Image: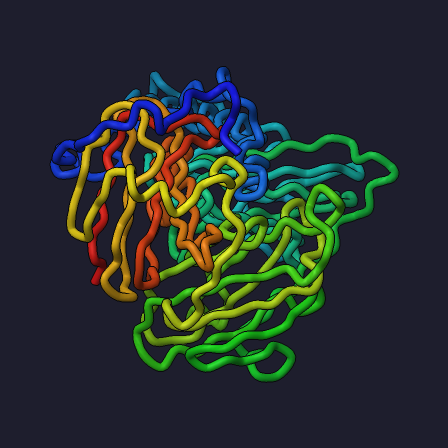
Amino acid sequence: MTDPDAPDSRDDRPDGAGTGEELAQQGPGAARPEGRGDDAADSSAGAHDDAGASSSRVRTIVYVGAAALLIAAAGFAGWALTGLGGDDAASEPSSSPAQDCGPVEAQVLALDGQAVQPDGPVCLIVTERSELTVGAAALQEGEDLALRLETVDGMALGSADSTLGLDPMVTAIVSPGAYVGYVTALDGSDPPPYLVYGSALPAAPELEDTEAITGPSQTQCGDSVPLVTDAGEVEADGEVPYFCLDLTEPTFLVAGAESLGDALPDEGGPDLLLSIARFDEDGAARVLRSNDDAFGYDPELTIDLEEGSYLVSVSAWFGEDPGAVRLYAGPAGSVMRTGEVSTVIADVTEAECEVAPGIAVGEALTLEGEVQYLCLDNPEQQRLLMEVATLGDQDLVLEVVQFVDGEPRRVAWADSAPDASSLAETDPALDRVFPEGRLLIAVTTYFGGAAADYDLRVTAAS
């Protein structure tokens, strides 16, 4: 149900629409503000509680990401000054050759310190049982990073990447010893310019040490890890929360996870995350894309993939056990999942399309004032790219609905673009196969307010 403090977007809906000049000239997101809008000041959080609850969790740690970005900016400035200043600009080094990191060639990173562009991995030496945090931030906007934390003997303690829009950060409860942080590009190659930092706090006695992660390698596919060719589904659990996928031809893939448990996250159930990774030449899985909410707390994503071997995996926020899940993958359109609509539009009916503006495939519109709904008659099941760009500072949400026996059913939902690479990129987009028939497109704000002054474009994707 719409936020009671937000104006009724249907009262002031314009009869006509513009030509979509912003999208036509700059593309969606060109006018994107540097940061979130002021919706939170005027709207009640949680209006999208069923659709974006774990995205809300992401936003609860935005301040951590912002702090990392500030550290990165300061580090980059110092790096640039040092590089340009010659002998007169000499600065205290932030890392030094490793002394106690065993067989790993790494540079020691002081706890509560940082290093810009270290020459290879960094080693952190912990002298007491600690809550160890390692993070990284790209020094150039739009660049992605992957981070993993390991023991010196190569056992993984955690990994993270920037595909969800946050700088990667890993926290682990560790005993005294040496630990190694590796920063790479998403495909495992050399990273773009970056800053890495570490910190350690005494670990509370009741916290258990982080167990090493033993992720699957390609050699395990078809043995201890289920193997699917081109399309299929697997019932998985926290012991083996993944399956291997062999694609015999280039595919626009849809993959998702459905929790089979009864408890919601606020009742102790898992809040799921889905990742697609490609096995590299060494048989290690390198993450290509991740996704959080799509259908309630269940994730789903679409991605163009080449022929090859991939890993579809599910995890849960904050290291929780994902529990029993159904994992699926196949050519987009082979799985047409629907779900409950967001609470903010729960009262919408088919009659809305009798008064809402229409949009056609291949059309771009500029919507002035408050416009919450548009309608699209999709002539056939096809891949469409729907893009929204705010002309102001609103943080928009895009939801597509189809009516089944008169009841609204969610077809797709997004609060960001699939290829977003920074927190500032708040304009949503959907790239997926949509069903034939009349589709209602709902544009709202993240906190449940009325959307106003934005561009919308719908194109047939190839």
